Image (cartoon, rainbow, N blue to C red):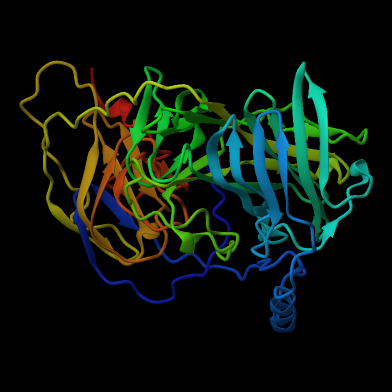
Length: 492
């Protein structure tokens, strides 16, 4: 587990992968990693133990059942108006057509999946989807939809939530709306499917329509201002300073800040809640809206958010996915609630446009093409790039693969070694198992986006990433462990 990403187990590619070409650096094609079959909750009713044929057939049959009925409705409260529903897509409780003070903010806010990974895979992994056989809510007079008003820290809040029980888990999915214009999307979970430490990865999907569809921008805080992300991306939430992300309407200037959830909420039944207060493993994903991509989660537990095609999300109909990190230690028992969330803070006045994205600069030093060979070091290995003719301090180093071609990018280990022996792993055990051809890929420590463990490489500019920190490359490379920050390669 690295940077909020749990790779889990996957199927092994059992076919020999032939030679492929890529620009020069130190590269090594790793061997096939044996994979195990995994239990996948295609619907919330699936038996969560290891599946065999008959059990899987039963799960498929159960998946056809309609979710438990919770009447759809509308709410008007303290400047908010919205519809709510539990759909047949098993994406939890959704808020629809969300307006605040007359401004439309969100077309649909939903909860498509919560992935669950146990230590050493003793159970699962699972992809839990809410909205099946909903349970009564004891703290809401046994209703199946909780709705109440309350005051917390001097501020008025409106709560609306559902409770679902999946296997041994008791889950409460809820939205808190403040009179001041904030939505806090929260998840609570308790229970143990197996008595081992595990992590839940709750995933929210926010289809923004700030003052109408089609003109939204996604921004990240750079410290000196918010910078535009022009293409679809996958990013650690910490890539933005202070975990601060923003979706802004280009025309009106109204915007919504996307921040970590507020930890002071709890379930009003006298029970104890352990909130997540560290958010360094949360993830953010930017996508352009496609109706065909809002059809419920069918991607299993080992996939994070799909659909990263590097399409433009500048002045577009934009969808933001937010994945949390919710750990549960076995020795805490099964009765403690654990919680985390994300916060959407609306700002209806005009805002400053994003700060300009720094233009590419510097001097390029090309290397030569090399062959990535299966289960052995590349040829040539290592490959040397001559850097000469510079004067003054070096401010930044970036590395570009110009034409990456490979049948299984996850097998590539790519190491950059500086003139003083500084070693930076640019890419290891990342990029999925789908063929890429003639792909441009740039590594920049200042980028927002990263490559994911089991998600296909789309290209663009990404941070270096290493999903196997214990790995050491063959002789010719310095011994590990290897960092992922290009800054030490920049001599001052």
